[in-house]
Image (cartoon, rainbow, N blue to C red):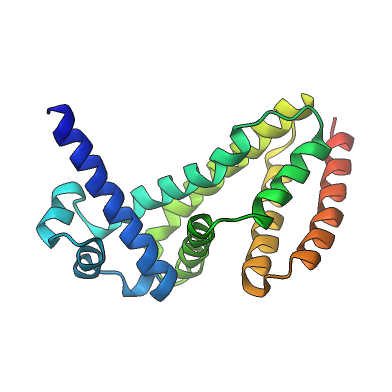
Length: 194
């Protein structure tokens, strides 16, 4: 495949994923169809199927893309103290750009739809496992502390809950207060787990 064809193919895949994100953030997952994705992306249905065999494949690629996007920000910097790491996590959520905010809306839509659609269960379970590994990794790099899967999962659940609340009410002062409480709780629990 020539470089131009690969570039064009990657651009089309990106269009498909961005169109899917836009649709889900407006209408939810249950309304997604290849036809709607193609219309939103400005391409034909056959072009969608050329790049993805099914809507399920689009959703799998989307979950992977969403998870990569959400963790990229925190991976760019190394932290030598847990306090700096937790401050950075809180700041990340307080300063979401429109695209990242849509990403979180889509992830929450996936989580909510999981109740009704079994096909999303495996994607979300794998994403949760990756998140747990990621949390353990950034904490280890911050202060060389190895934490349990349970502690990393509890932190992931609390982050999800607080971010979801923040996305709904957009109250940054409340988020800062709650994040300060949770951060101190987790910093103490992490250091006590040594």
